[in-house]
Length: 40
Image (tube, rainbow, N blue to C red; front, side):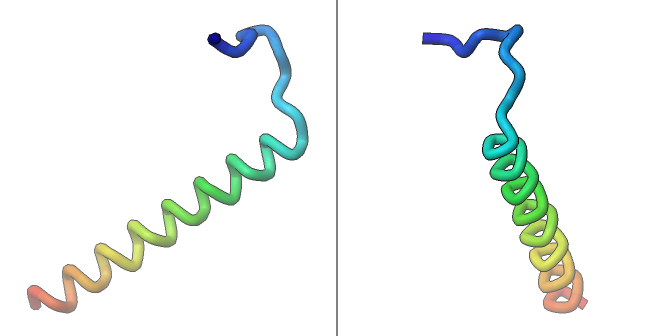
């Protein structure tokens, strides 16, 4: 069951996707910071 490629994402889906993207970026940033400070 693949989603319709022509279907526009809803505002709820876009908001959820944006929050996930921000969370991933923050997580990667903190992980890199801890890794650099820990190894330095």
